Length: 154
Length: 154
DNA sequence: TCAATTTAGATTGCGCACAATCTAATTGTC
DNA sequence: GACAATTAGATTGTGCGCAATCTAAATTGA
Image 1: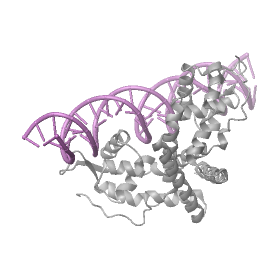
Image 2 (image 1 turned 90 degrees about the vertical axis):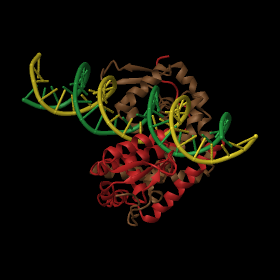
Image 3 (image 1 turned 135 degrees about the horizontal axis):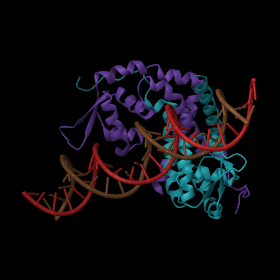
Image 4 (image 1 turned 45 degrees about the vertical axis):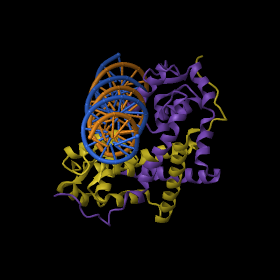
């Protein structure tokens, strides 16, 4: 009962598992983004929401959630923090009062300028060729879709 | 001030960014693992810690943290939950009382059997060839290392 | 028209992730 | 041996992620 259980060769090691590679890459990205985004006063998920809104605001919470794979339990407090920060307005849709639409404030729109250099900063850190990144992006998208499909069926 | 800001062509769309692909793939993995691991009574990060311990117990908190890229602020409460669940023992090292070593209990060791089929279950869901997954694993590891290196220098 | 169902968000509770801070033990230096 | 510096974990506070539940608004349809 006191320690040193025998390792199990049938159990794959942590480092050989794809899920763990994703897990670590996600952490590494976060670590890279954090100081860059701190200058904008944003966390990483907040930055992703701002990307959505910079791409076109007036969208509903649900639409943002579908694009980011997040539900209202995550988004509602996050969006409220962006509102408190003065970057967005949350407004009930007059036509359908169930929906809340998100609009950029002047400040939120202006922040776009400060955020413009972020992708390049990160891109330089990675240093891979555009082609290599494109390929990796495609592989990850396929992986995501395969997982979601399997998770839905289960 | 009322809505419909102009989209910005210079800002890359969410779906074209590597960081977002990782972010989504991570969520998709989590969604896939959740119901499978629920049968073991584990969350995904807890499962990763158990993988470390099944690979050899008696390791320190610091060693687990380095392998998983987590600090004590995350690990301490997580390990305490595993202890409450009866899967591990936390024990101060007699030689160096600063360190806490983790040992599997009989129950934690036994859980290995129930967890044996997990990687295969997930692997089937992905459905890719072993070679394709190996390649993706290597790419992700390289990406992680590039990001960590850049983050350290900054 | 009005009751049943569906839908959009909000809320609550739990667990992970991490920065900042704290305590206690160890090491290094003199 | 005394004392500064380092190291291992624990603690606190903030924010993300998600399941479960709740409310209110819209839709369906008998």
